[in-house]
Image 1 (cartoon, rainbow, N blue to C red):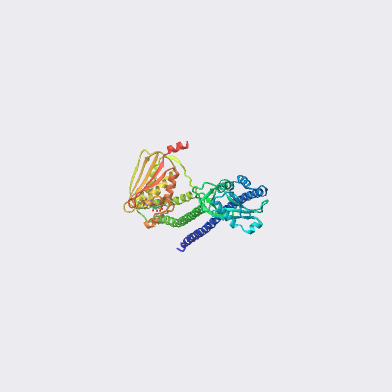
Image 2 (image 1 turned 60 degrees about the vertical axis):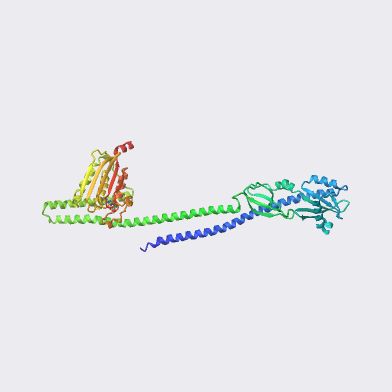
Length: 508
Ligand code: ADP
């Protein structure tokens, strides 16, 4: 009783550890999920920022080159509208150019639209005195446009104020594709001030926007957006990883649970076997004691010459023979069982008929059957084929079945023994009208030490190895043993043994 709580405690502890492990695993997975998402977003931000810087640098450099070329032209003595026109033809990045002198006079263009006028006004208004004096450049936001304003030295007229308006179409068609080649994984898009995509490094399709980063002063209203193909966004990727971890973790838990169950079963089975073994020792001792005390009692009575009646004396001798036969059967069972267990059992196979063996067994049981009030039916078919068998082992198997048939019969004491040809072999049946066997137990009774309801509740002593032995003997002969019948309706054990002919063929 005291030993019981130990496995419960152990399994409880392992279970609790598994629960704690699950909880910790879940928490750290959640934390990892958040950290991984953050890291992936950071990576995405770095990619987008780098792209923005690259674009901005390229635009600024192109503008500087353009401005330098214009400045070079302005230093020429014959600088005028035609020089600007010529410059414009070489620099398609600029849609419009405005040139004013220090007094605010517009030198270029010669004619201008109201829209141009607005830009020129903005240009003139925003330029500080300092810029006129020191020269330099800055970006001006005029409505939706970004104007690059610069004060450049010129030959005769003093410094000139130049306003350059970028041509967005040239920018998106020629400059951006050069700078933002797709990397295959993420798509980069440039969004204008209204959030419209003006350029995309790849077709966006079902890609999801991950984040946007702004440009600096060269493209103040525009943003770079990073898109990930559907299912590849940081969140999706983290989720997929988390799912894989979770599945692996669940598998681990299942394996632990399966291990627990298997161990529990093993432990239970081992303790069951240990219990059955101790029952076995007690049962065998008891089984040996009964015939021994009978032998001793009858032998002593005979020895003292207390039985004058010869018929009586014969009866006593018969008891001595019967009980000693029973004793040797029991001892044989135990010895054979131990040989089988240690793998040392050998069978001495010869070819012969099973009929004389059946008769021999029946002969040894005739007296006890009579004495215990059993009626016996024997039907042996005349056409039984020869079998390749160990006669003594088959005798032992049949004796065990007959012994059980007697042991497990109650009021209806009738035993049938039949042998007939079936297929390429012989079936020997031993049937009784006794207590029967529940369907659920039919397989288990052939296990070693197994006894239904620890059969002493059924009032019969036994060792629990008889049927295990029968099964081993029959299977060693290439046959099989089965049982039928219902509780209360008796049992019928059928032993099938293959005939010698096919075996000989197999050997040859
Ligand atoms: P035992 O020494 O207990 O008879 P066996 O291996 O011969 O051991 O049988 C195993 C169990 O099968 C028995 O304990 C009994 O419960 C059941 N059994 C065997 N033969 C019969 C039968 N003819 N009728 C009912 N129950 C049987």
